[in-house]
Length: 189
Image (cartoon, rainbow, N blue to C red; front, side, top):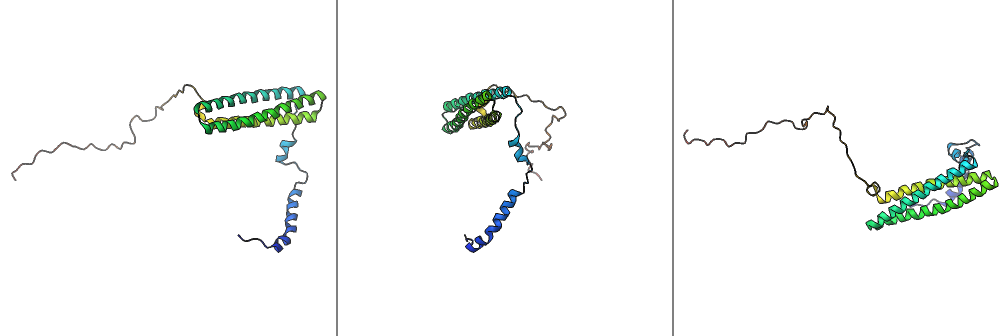
């Protein structure tokens, strides 16, 4: 591979800096679609925020129970690959729940002090953790596979459209061949 001579690098470096800073200056204070998600605040009262956070915590704990059940399935199957995959997701999930406990404590403290900024921040953290836990739960289900998650009797109902012909349309209907042995030829000509 050829390297670029040092004199070219030195000559074009100022132009690269000018072009790069122009890209940052292009956003002249206008709000873009990417900025909207971070600047929006939830318009929930402190009690609504607390109840929504508790609902998220309950759903996260339910997801934790399901992942532990998936871990048991992998252990029963003695499938080390599935077990490692589920254990990895379970470890991450438990870490997120520990961070969530801290965020809940901080949010309760902020509500007690009347600190709106901290309350909003902690609620945003809890919401993000809830979404991450949900994704990890889905990934853990994928580690095991669909056949183990959905257990129960399967029932298949088949409806046949009456407009479909009852004959085999792929059979061209060739004439049958006569496979009987012909009579023996006579000896006289």
